[in-house]
Image 1 (cartoon, rainbow, N blue to C red):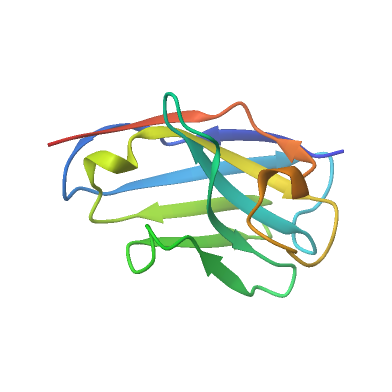
Image 2: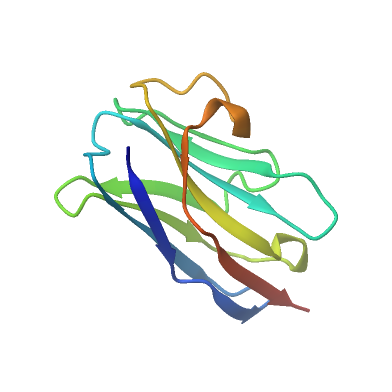
Length: 124
């Protein structure tokens, strides 16, 4: 089982940037599907981005061109660079791990291990 700890959330004005980190322990993430999700109050958990064991990436439509997912296998850490932030990006952001090399989809139920989340607030 992988333990995941997110950091890097905070408050920022619209148009600003944040970089989220997800430190993993207990197993390497280099050959696993890793994802970022977010959940705003009153809304369902939404897939933001994923990266496969082979470094293929995919993004949700609402963040394409603004967010970038990456990983540092030496540090066993997953990142989410968020640029051009909008108020609608406000949510708790979660890191997730799937016990497989490939990512079948950006659906929360496909992922096995979760971090505790980090709050991102974007003001207009």
